[in-house]
Picture 1: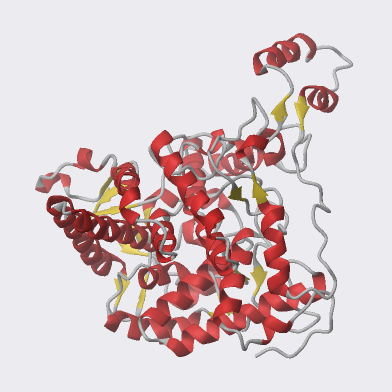
Picture 2: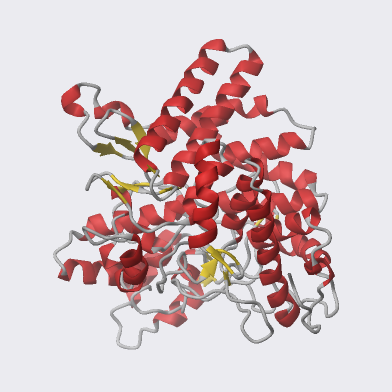
Length: 528
């Protein structure tokens, strides 16, 4: 199926619903496939229901303000569990949920937190709480939150934001975070699984890793992204096989390449020069200039060699929330244990991932024993999670303003490439984390600048095209140049869950910004 490219998008087939028992379909295929007149597309059409959304699923209303457009979109993007087709790849959840849109017709993990921000701003607390309950159900059922609610996503997760979701829901005053303490602990145990096998003796402390846990030379435990399988992703089978063939010609083990590709998908940053091999000696300037060449092919991917700053910031938050909720219940032992874990993780992140000279956090290559050279927006997760020290934030603010701030918002990395998680693209999730993170530490001017530039970016595209999209090109905003982002494995997606959520929350937080007055298909005003 995937080799023949029956569908333009590899994800389409694995999302199809079999019309009869898959065993019967496979038997029919084996009986017919060698016949000279066998028609594979016709066979697929006869045996599978294609669930791809129609391109004109929703048409924007000319003259409609952007906030009203987003409020209307929630019902378009909401799915009910009773609508799940039998025998398909969708995982069952008990409550309604919001999908990103376009090719992404299922519940996604880290996307959903940023979607929930908009649900809160739109007054949809019940739907927000339903989604939190769905994630708790997934942890109870599978031991972790899958990348998305598909069977082919079960071997990996995504950036762990369940603690942030619980905190957000608690702020609405009608749930108690303590009710989700068992799931929070279960998720933490899943991320730390394998750490016990790394040993504790001095001889075992030379950089080693097992599953998602890395032991650094001083004995510190930090985490990395991983996947339980070392095979092509089902939803991107042809793309992964093509990448692996190139890598194999360069002498790499294909199973290792598949694992790196899947781990990058767990990161949510699929894909970026962040996960590609760097030159042995690469200063900041050469990293920026060399990004495009290094990122031209994913054959050099090395995700599991990297200790990511954002993942460890999110796990610090998870440990801190578990400690706080445990103390609330009177469980002194758990509160002390998780507070200790958070303290140790914070110290390790500062030691191994902080660069005092450059004033920023960087990912760390544990195999090569050195920090990565390209600055990325992942470092702002330390502010969002409350891990960074005030002095570090004071140093980071000018670094981020100088090296990552673009006319349209916060750049994903300072490396330009053909991968979608690099310049020139910007993503809603990173804008929100930067805005909230800098504001939390008193850097209100930079937080406001990022917010205003991002709102101008989204508004310009909405006014011209009547839609919100997955990612944006961070150019100077005008009628001609403002555009959705490019690059990546698939076309730009409309919808779009986390863009809607972040934008709706920012519109409410910045009522004087001209984006609040923008309407679809209207002349573009001057934004500030």
